[in-house]
Amino acid sequence: LILSLLTFVISYFIISNDILVLPNQAVLLVSMGFFGLSVIGLSYGLFSASWDEDRKGSLFGWQELKTNFQRVKEARKEAK
Image 1 (cartoon, rainbow, N blue to C red):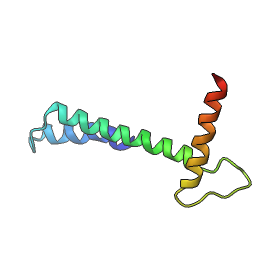
Image 2: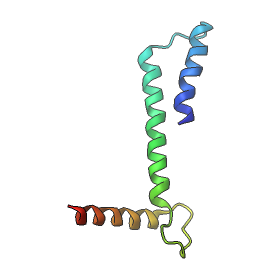
Image 3: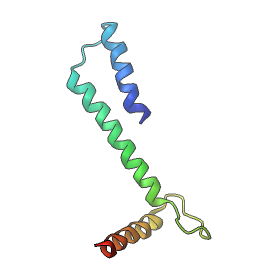
């Protein structure tokens, strides 16, 4: 999220000091890309954490990701 916001500050500095000509679309796309990566990272962090208090999670959380995603899918089916 910070990189998404810093994109505007850095691009303003580059453009105002005539270092480089940056198209507005490039600044917007880079900012949106960083924002999208932050959303993906936050979602991965949420789903890859161990939701069982008594169980320690793994380093990357692949098994926890599968388990937690399955729980969410089942809860959505029950809610319908």
